[in-house]
Image (cartoon, rainbow, N blue to C red):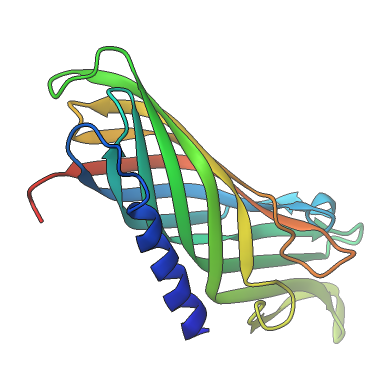
Length: 224
């Protein structure tokens, strides 16, 4: 597992050196996103979706290609997962909360629209593929069942387990994009969407990660 993480980091550092035809000055990026995450696919279609908050945090480098385009590779620690419930006719239910933590490589490209300067605010569209390696996880399953000692009452039975070792693959990949406002090329905020293209379940079951939320970025130049 550690070898995969080391190779993942080396690949990221190599990609940051590929863009050599730059105009302007590179900047460092601090990235923070707050999202609602869920699964899409076979199993998720049978469940009622419940809110599952997550956080994504990381760093990157903004490499200008020209006045409007830049290459922004990032490494992020990203939470994904799912919170869903299946309700039954006898008022019982089965509810699961799955938290999957990934190390993501994001080779993003960004387009800044409008008059671009250090003193203006502009619209920004960014996106690209992402490649994730699962680090750790937790799954909590909660079942509301009829009390065997009193049929007129219910009890809650819950258990916790690790899903990467049994239910889900550690490798995830897909695409991610965002749209927002960049203020004076120093801070940016907007909406972000992510959709997995890699099936993280064993065949024939299909499960894909998905998220929607808000992002916030700060761009640094000579501060580090």
